[in-house]
Amino acid sequence: MTKLSAGYIHVYTGDGKGKTCAALGLALRASGHGMQTYIGQFMKGTHYGELEALKGNPYITIEQYGGVRCIRKEEVTREHIDQALAGLERAREEMLSGRYDIVVLDEVNVAIWFGLLTVEEVLEFLEQRPVNLELILTGRRAPVELIIRADLVTEMIEVKHYYQQGLSARNGIEQ
Image (cartoon, rainbow, N blue to C red):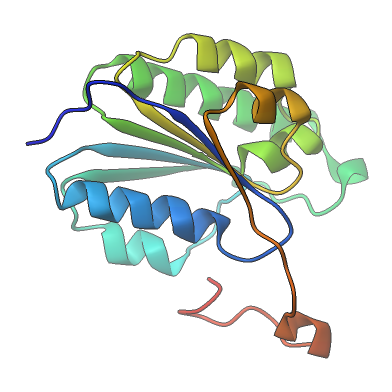
């Protein structure tokens, strides 16, 4: 089993497709080396194909925080905020448990943009990261403070997308 001697902070952001997929791909690759990954998905409370595909993988744990869905900032309720805070706390517990080599906070950037979490709360989370743990933050609109703090930042850029033609998310491809 591989253990990291040093861990880094990644931010996958931008308006293009592939941020969550990049994080899942990293987790899948790491599982091939016997590394444990914890994935906390913010603002996702529905069934996605990756949940089913990774269900039997003993190296990857996925939990969702956000059973109550909001689409616009003005729809945010105290319940949404409480779910996000509970998710961040749960991810912190898992990060500090010593069981995981990698922790992914999926869509955490969007949770900040929606006002469900503050940048300060997430920066505090980053400061508590064990030195040998890899931490991945995904989602559009990454705050500049997280970009500055990260060791690796990838911006996904949408050049062309079939959503612009009115196509909705398809099972197995986008969800």
